[in-house]
Image (cartoon, rainbow, N blue to C red; front, side, top):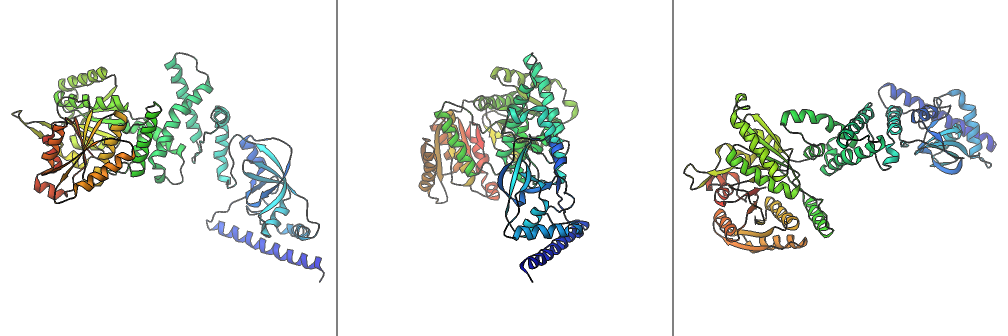
Length: 561
């Protein structure tokens, strides 16, 4: 047998094997398996409004990146397996030529994005795939489209790509913000995005009392509406709970569910707040890496004269009455002025009849007055139900809950925990700032530190206040149950020194609440930062409760983490 006949024989067998593979793909597709098809170049070009950009260039092209054909897209599978028996003679002849000494000329391809389409040379591509070649030499004509096209594009993606192309052409977002990535997974999403831009354009004109050019509104929407929400989505890590979806998908979901949340909660929440709340793992707080990142950023911003980092963007304030509730609100406003926080006030009444009572009207006026005095808008909501349940329901959507949980005894000589609110300390998914009496500037803070995970969070907040607010910091460890207080304080010192934070360190012995309160009084601290001390819950109940007793004795605000 001559070498030519042997080559033709082998090529014929290779064609038969390729046809069997193609038939198997079709059978599997009939049983529900995914059968990826070659794309029509003309269809893709039409949908993407693509334009041939320049003359062909000779280059080596990955065979896996060839996803379609100009005219033969029905004759081959996506892997360029032949689907037509009548192609056998042509296929065998090409195979013999490609494996012979003369070879074959380069194929001709179009390239849109990262995807290639065969203009001439479908059989050569098919043979090369069966020979296991990684690349093929081709004259490539670039075709320009305003939306990206990847090599793993599927026919089902074309609807989205067409909608994306129309969106880009109508908004010019690709030229206004070249780095913008607005991928979606649901048909119709780009139409909703365009509606968002149109609404933003309309209200931007009203706010600025001028005719705003459309391209200016597009850029402003992207910079001030879309990008902050996406930044919060990324920071929250919430995308891990939405596999197969994109950041733009979640942006639209958040925007469209804000109305329902506003009705349920009584507050207007920005989309970035909702995104952060969706990514929050209740009770965990920031992990070590993120805490360190915050402190490094605070130091960098301070060095550069900037103020861009905050850990309390949203505050929820329990306002049970005019006396204690407004005092709690005023304390929250002290924090809000430093953190540029949004403030939400909540008043809970026992029944619907009380919602429009004179007491509520007076309380609403007092809330508004306090907000005006501080220069901060306070959203105020009144709801019916259990106070702790209402606060817990809303707490997940904010960063800190502020509540006047400590009130005077009937005689006025001592303090006690407000009976209806005691459960909040155990059940709140967010830190609780327990207020007492008149608001304080929070210029000096005491960290109750026992080396536990909650105490580590308290130490982080103390470091943040010292670094950003210039708060004077005192770290106190109370030796009990023969623990090594010196080693515990050393750990706190090492942590703070990493971030250039100075503090006084105090080692005391005795009952924890009494010792902490004594140190706070001696150092004139205006705030106590503490987690739950190391006692188990049943032991705290047996001993009277370290946390609860500290709150009652403190005589100053306590942030419970």
